[in-house]
Length: 116
Image (cartoon, rainbow, N blue to C red):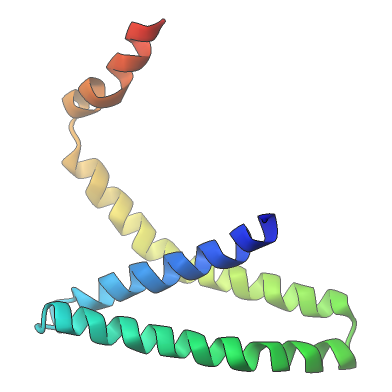
């Protein structure tokens, strides 16, 4: 279950957030159709990666040690997280700018202090 979390969660985050970010870009003026096109391209690329990835991993594991194979997989996960970090940071900044201190107080902190 933990391995599934570390494998599937980055995939879901990357595919959905990148699809929405690229599909809603100002260059793409097709609305939902543009979003669907970008999502299909990303899903297709993921399918190709899911097909070719195990072949590469098996070949690498036969030629090298399993440690090198696992290090390569960890490196790819870190690379994916770095690619997503810029978008996540921009989304975080946009979300914090929209929320005022009063909104924060009335939505969350007030309940915590009232329960004590």
